[in-house]
Image 1: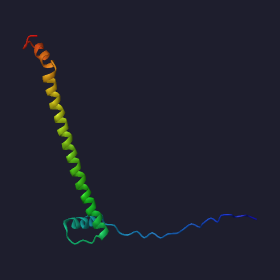
Image 2: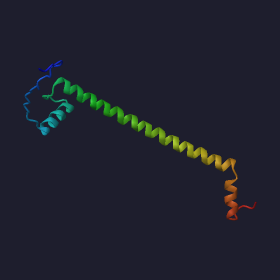
Image 3: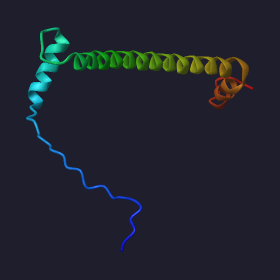
Length: 104
């Protein structure tokens, strides 16, 4: 005689009915929705499409701004470093003296 404390569940069955998927039609409907024409996309898909478009625009503008600021920062550091070397060190005088253009 067997004592069973826990009953093991039977395996569950499911039915999977694959539906036809046409990627060209999906892309066509998405493109129609982007251009503002009437499409067969659901409201959720239209909302998702608008949100992804807006996020891509925001990400692109943010990265352009960051790149521009980084470029300005590099130029500023280069110019200020050059001014420091020219005015506050004797590196230029030593360089000119090396070629005999200025006497020490």
